[in-house]
Length: 198
Image (cartoon, rainbow, N blue to C red; front, side):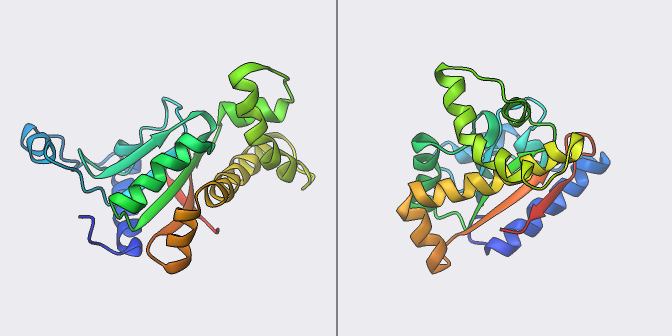
């Protein structure tokens, strides 16, 4: 599956998402046979950075099975060195053609950053990562649910920017066309994934 182009992988993910969103029977291979087949190695077709939110079941929402996706999850789908290193590994060693940053509607981490709550420790460092996205969304003069959605979208763009800054290897692969870095937003109510212009 990993020999596909980034565009073909994206189309495959969207087809799987359409099945998931309308409640069709999913085709993801999670069989014992597939588990045994992937035990010797993995060849995912894409790497996905997503939020840790329990309502964002990455493999399910794309109808993907064991070994199909290399998924990195962190609250607020933010990028730090560990996340960048994980995605860099997927690009350099697994040769994924698509690296997708997946945000979602109603993100609690983004909402907390929007509310301006001041927290310390590890959670405070997470809020600092989201703050630039919140600032850009707030500068548009919108409010309410539209503001949260805009901040979630901006946070995807922020994560992409942070990834390309923190990983020269991913940036070089993107510049050469070896990997396509893309963003998308998952709607937790409808189940639909929408691509974002990056």
